[in-house]
Length: 420
Image 1 (tube, one colour):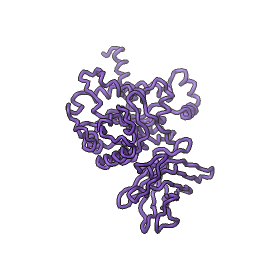
Image 2 (cartoon, helix red, strand yellow):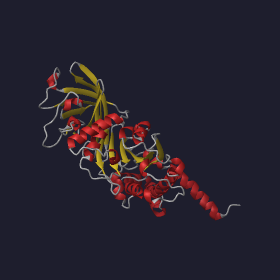
Image 3 (tube, rainbow, N blue to C red):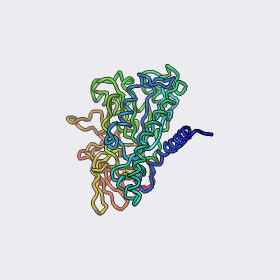
Image 4 (cartoon, rainbow, N blue to C red):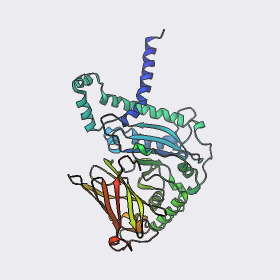
């Protein structure tokens, strides 16, 4: 015969397990819009220390505090500023021995936006008062699930930090990032599933340890970063990239890391030490994907555009790529403005392909080269109407030969089910 107290504990463990698994249900909540972004937190294994007895090690305090600030802040409003409601979060350890990554945790943030809470309360109808009295219903359940989220996150790390789960001591491959265990693992790992939304990657790693020879001049540092990125050959899948856990105060480290990230199919948005969060861009509220072609001299090439805009119409995590003899890719910045009738205009930031120019700067002359994507042109403008986009890439001081209007014109159609 089971004693009543043990029965309650058994039932609690059973229901807790069910609701922990229910984090998945928050992403695809029926009647609510699916989140448009996912966040992937990658922990460089070089920053982790084993915890054989399951007790937190002081050497793991820095990254633990960072994750606490990010995922479990004291003020719930901070969480709503950093994450979309019900956004998927995946945490993985990038192994230092070059053998790939190890999944620690994945789940959907168990909270609703104010508008979603109003919608759910309205849908409760006559049951609303009863739910309020007993503390039941979806909104109350989400508050309790946030506590379970915290517990499950902690339990996941107990397993991940067991000595047998980590690479052997001394498994790191040395100070050359292009052949490091970190880069080798990043190339082997499947960093995210594009079906879950736009990728925002937060990499916790002291990458400064690989850039001790970073040049002191900004242009030279960028050129160095581009070279290192090309040799490392990592593909972050056109993600927003944030770096945390950095040490050192070299002024040109940021410049070199930006170039390294761009060569690795990512845009480095912000960096931060372990004691604070990086400055995040706005949450995407609209995502449009287009596929078509762009006219180059004598040839049309396939083109893809991903346009994501925040609530103010500012582009976030947006890219264009053209497949010529090799892929040319470029982040997009600017504004997306839509009229009531549905026609939208896209106006770039008038820098566009100059992100590939190591000498760029407020006082520097722009550089134009056939070796740069889109020749280094600074302007991209487009018009969206009836499921299609048309526009051009141009520059007031550059004339593309043998093309109409000396511009690289493109047209593409909306791909409603695409995930690029």
